[in-house]
Image 1 (cartoon, one colour):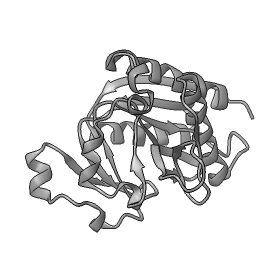
Image 2 (cartoon, rainbow, N blue to C red; image 1 turned 180 degrees about the vertical axis):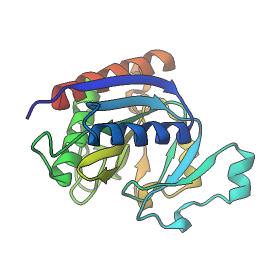
Image 3 (tube, helix red, strand yellow; image 1 turned 45 degrees about the vertical axis):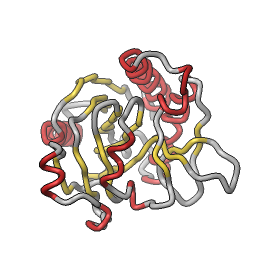
Length: 223
């Protein structure tokens, strides 16, 4: 079933504020007073732990994180530990899967991955999924160290989705040293800027291009 998708570009907002915004949107969609919405935004530095998170995957102490101005939140999305911060495009997709005639969480996750792969292709990068993992990786031959560029973790209330994805665009990758990203010690995190190398435009321009590429890709798949 075709449903409209509204996209809201919110800039940089605190994690708690974005969580409250999602909660309100979920209830509005469930109540039939609002339609599906994709919130595109960025967070100040924050580490979140999903439902299956192992606290040992946060490598920095609480005192170290406080000193660096990094918040810590335990949340209801799926997955393990991840980092959000400046230069990372976060997308929270609140949509009614049942109303779309697609009440299948695994299919929804594959659609999120597909939208991000399409967006990265528009930015000149070849990305792919990897068997057994959720998220988006750079397309590499078997045996090459996996490089993860986008993480995904969703929650459901009824059949209404919330939480979503985090795409590293101009993210400072050294910030991931404070955690074991998604609990995957053998995976290296990467970013659009890192993969483009000398071909990358300025950080501000690349962030804007990525935002619009993701918006277009998700409108094509969900709009």
